[in-house]
Image 1: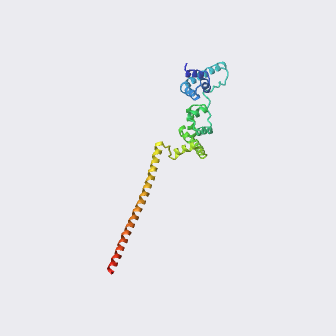
Image 2: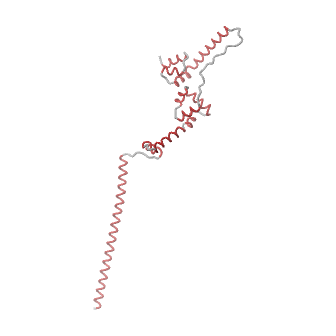
Image 3: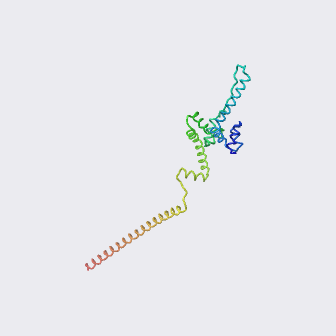
Length: 226
């Protein structure tokens, strides 16, 4: 026999959803979904039949009594959801299923409660309330990084500073680029030294030529005077 059928039989026998879930190792939210979707009409009919039978027997036995027999209330008790606890669960970034499991109700009950309490559906409420949890988590991460947690520093650097890990090939290429730039600077300096040496040699040659002509002129003047 399937688990679902066994759960149905226990439900019709009067067991609660939580007890059925524990007995058959199922999630309470799942059992509540089955009750709402498949068995709730059957349960109402059964409860109505029992109530009618009890009322009929009471009327028959107390036909002379003027006061009517009070009817039994049918249905599950109202689920009380604490607003502060709900917001704390959102801050811990629990899912709707997790929150429903905590309050022992189905997810539709959580959605309806959000609409009645906040005037919006669960998604919009969750988005606002879980922001506090994200802020707290970021604060803890930055505090860990400030305390010297290297892994957290690397993670935050990648997430917020655009940093990334470099492969061996990328590191080699960068080193080659640095070496080439250094070599270029050295060549420019060497070329400048050579140019300066050539310029000095040209000046020395010009001076020698000038001195040669000066001496030649002096000799010519000496010969003319003789």
